[in-house]
Length: 318
Image (cartoon, rainbow, N blue to C red; front, side, top):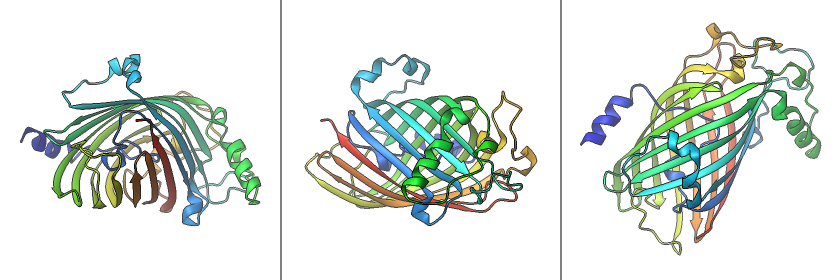
């Protein structure tokens, strides 16, 4: 009962949005030791603007319990713990990414790269899950967004990006995130519903939101950990969320650097956005495969909604 009260208290205020999501319960690998690769691109949605690309390399292992960063996290009572590291890179462009001129009333070019330490605590009795992460890196030319997009466009024989001289300048990325999920309903591991909340604070993103996720199919139950690796799992998921935005360095620039060629002013940031993620996940023995599509409403006054897709490939070590 206490957990339901906690969810009700948090729902009106917090669940952070993010572009690369690997901490949601329906993305659980079912093991404490694994490797997973994530790749996002708006190419999957026949687009080439806004959040244009992101990728991450994710590694979890019991030995990472000794990571000193974990001592900064809340240490809840739980049955299972997962500790890991992830290297993430994200990039953004305006609609006209070819022109060398500043695209007024559109989003600026921006890229960020950071190393993330994360910990996930799963309570199989209360059917709840607490995830935390701390990210450290930089936003700006040092994140090689220009080089990455140019190389990919050259590979697929697409137009050469020309506006990266106007990108958000180098600044610090230091972000903390805490998320909470509570399973509300599960019917014979065929359909489930979870309330989700989280909070993100830092120099890259500060935001809050609320939502839920639901899965249907041949499910793993991440809140029980009683499945075996030999079982075939295949299911669909959907996760709608509503966000309250406090700060976005990819639009407004970093907090320490003031010489950005172009940014979106604070008054033109959309303080409320909505996002929906949906897709399919397949698990068999030690293999994890996922395909995801995402739509988000406009993030600044003169902007437009954005769409992208992505996939994940993971392997268990035990």
